[in-house]
Length: 350
Image (cartoon, rainbow, N blue to C red; front, side, top):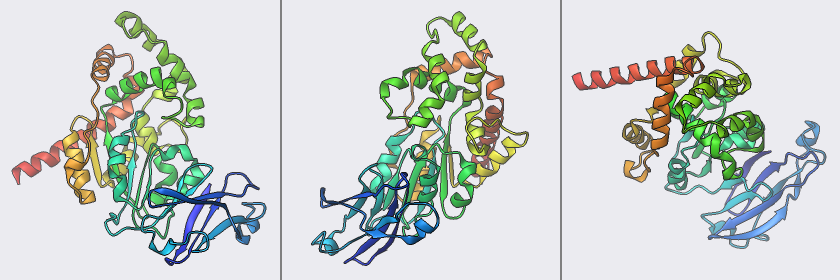
């Protein structure tokens, strides 16, 4: 799906939505004043979409004026949604909006959505879990050219969007110790079917099916059996779980293995990020994030800490059963920690 605003004069709003279906006509939902005001089908053609082979008829554009929404000019909280997917298409700017474009690159399998939700009201355009939307739609989110206040979060593959990210967005990343991240992933995967699609989209769920089956069968209460199960991990599961951070930063596809220079490339990306935090130092991360946004850090919720994750992570570290799987992530995390310690020491000396 593609979409964008073309103009908002106050008395008239013009935009377009290109649905995933080649011949479908999008439905637009108009909201304001805390209620739904109208739902209608796209009422204008965009011949360029037909010429480009993107849509059969080009009937993807639409205009909204006082005939459809009588108090359109006075609706300070006007919102437009794609009725079929629920995706936000446009929200009118407000005086208090943060005039920045922020990407919080999600590196955890269990997302930090509470942080995102706390920030959402501060931005004109907001979307979380964007990895579920598909590559075309995610690219479009980075190209909302008439919107100056944008907040996006998701576990996208950075390399596929690097050009657009680096052309206007400030990136925020929180990292977790690789053993703790693997422990959290195994625990989430062992229970993820209970969330009924809330965490993963259909494509991601299908890709993770082998890892879910493996995690669900792990004998977490028997250390000897658990060690044996980890050492006998099927190759297709190991591929899904190995070095997730380095791969997210440097790979172009979910099953691509890190190259010889992947750690150095990942370090370059983190070096160009505006805020890089570590999960075991949530206060530092939230303070840096708040300073970037220009808000009080107390408005941001604490990141969750799970005792079960810490216990399993200790076992993973001591068992040595997954060391090879996490080799590149451990190297990257070591360099990040060394840089953080140096910055702290330099600040203390200064």
